[in-house]
Length: 397
Image (cartoon, rainbow, N blue to C red; front, side):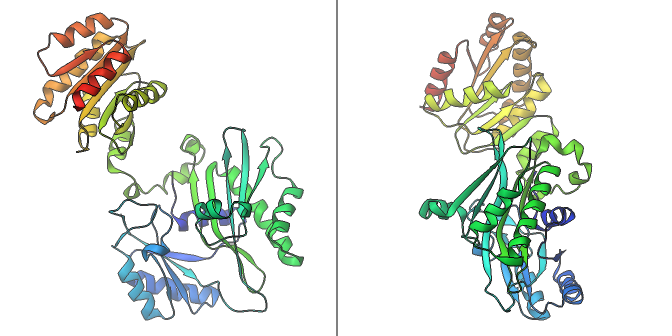
């Protein structure tokens, strides 16, 4: 589950991470009140107006603005709230901005130089270890830094059984070239950040930039955070932070129906039972000359209602030119699945304009094939993956 910047900062702050403070606002009037409150709390006379969407690169799309007066706060908030913000991490349509974060200005002048760093904490699944990825090139696209300056990217691997060690935190602070009190500040920041990552069951925390202020404070100026969905049962309070407005509506609808659905850019829809078989089905679609339009796992039950819901979600994608149904009947019998498919087809025959290829294998597979072949409907049956692949190829010609 992705979080907005202001939500991530609230969680990070609860674990002792120093963050850029701010208040969320949904209207220009609320933005003015938020700016006044921030002035009372921090003394800031400049504010940063930040669009809150689940995407990075907001500044490049005009979603982050400096306001030097309350009138500018109103103007900037008026321009940003309601806009479709297009960034390198959104589609061409962008995402609608429903709220802004009115944050304190931390780029004030002082005795020492301001510096920006990059720090993220995530899991290396191949090694079964957490890792801290960091760079002195903060405030920039980390992907471009990795491509153009790979020597500026550093990784510290952490064994989850022992946790982050003091020498590792000191190593990171040393790589940043810090000394004295700010060196200690960075060490404390890193420990707090890792604690937040572990105890919130996050799958990613990315801070870009981590700011060293002119008075030698360390703070998270931005924050990107993703919570592991499988651990949300341990954090019922985090569930309230979910913003379905930021999610694909088809994926939200599928989840409510108990379907595991992820939309992709392709021309062949697929409906499968089981994640492993779904991945294999996507491979066979690719090998057959098509491109998968989605990942859809209907689970262990494939009755008419469930199948119909899956068909309707797949067919919302106008780029779909064919649908491949690939079901392995182990616990569920293939003939029951076939009946569910035929019933669903009859219920929505007027809206099905693309060929449907059904490959059923397992218990009563031959009976299921006979049911489909004798149905008189425009549903093509297949027994093997090879047959299914050929049928997909022919349907795309």
